[in-house]
Length: 334
Image (cartoon, rainbow, N blue to C red):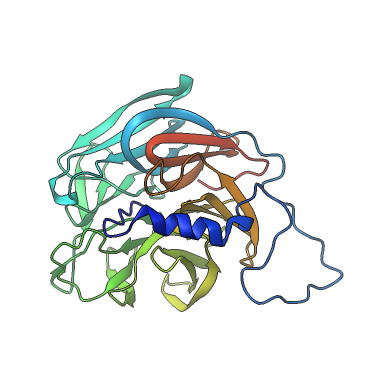
């Protein structure tokens, strides 16, 4: 989700580009990001999810920093959020836009609180990470917005960032601190909200960590979490009760990972600052990259991505100032 890197310089991204430019291709045979292992000779190579993709196109531009793309299948629209990089979270109003048929973009909701990640619960209710208000909210059918998480062990949350929901209603969200506001928690967390509303810190990460984008595997047995500053995606095992265990490295990204999504067979699509959309196979090997124009800190920095459309084959990509989309050969998950 949205990460500002206020203390970082675009030269960091430029150096990263030179170091790993060979990885920023448009597809091809998956290559390992870790130690090479011998593949069984009887295994059939999975289909490359980038072969046969369409061209990246601009859907809308001239906005602030866009985030939180979420397809709403009941309405056939995409919703996404907007914030203002020039203002601190706590001082920002928030806007959620919707993209409908005919590529018409209109305001879905305006608020006095900035929005970031968006998601739907099993009842189709909209969930929103509101970093300025330091809370996660749920919108009821009558339009009432109710906080469902704002404090943990008596302390205010940091800056809720991204959200994903399991089919039983379990909610996972990340809680970094990109704005360097007054923190009340002494860790950077990955939280779980159980269907009964109980809030649990599943990872109490060091203050040097930057938990950001979050995604579930298709069978919901794995949870992926981007650690932006570390240029790493971690993966956790998900137990039947929703608890997480065995956090470990899944992939090292060429750029700085932000929001993420998965396709129907478990390929992970990562919005990568400095590169575009990096794509990894379920075993962590790299398929390649969907390049974007000027995706660095000084340009149209990608922030997140989500599948949409009736056939689930359209990947929407939010970025600084612009909303993109690209058609992919394989369907994704909403």
